[in-house]
Length: 177
Image 1 (tube, rainbow, N blue to C red):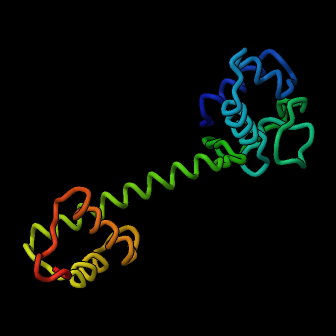
Image 2 (image 1 turned 45 degrees about the vertical axis):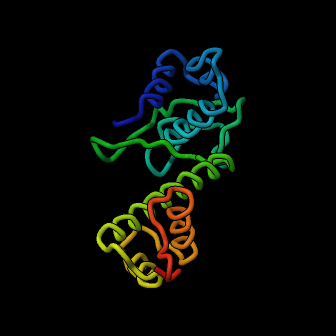
Image 3 (image 1 turned 90 degrees about the horizontal axis):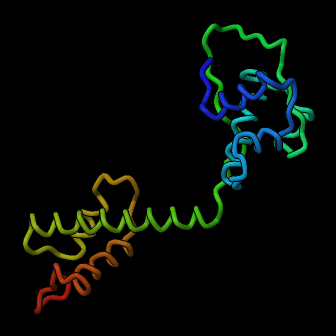
């Protein structure tokens, strides 16, 4: 049986006890350093051991509810049997991202995309010393990128390269070059 380290720690606790509550397991594993992140992660791992579709190693007191209560009693399934000699028991549960995590992820993705656009623009400028703005936008939009940049994004990055970073400059006679 292949399990995570946290699952193995939970199963070891049942060597000395027939049944434990979720709170007792949490206290024995974390001690006094109980955080919400650890609580959520432990819940996912225990629910993986309670999953009747994969391996019903632990039995929950209330099998109908998809989450664990602190006072919910867990017992070891003495009648456990699996049809394969080797199998994996994976964590499951509700690993929801908070709004703050989503926001930081979105800003990181946006910054990374801006850097990729900047790099592609500079690469095109190095290959061609002068280029029309429409041709430049067309070339960028035809590149095989992991996402499809909009014309406004390309124009914003172009303006950034011209004004803030001063890597590129417009032609004095023709503003489209």
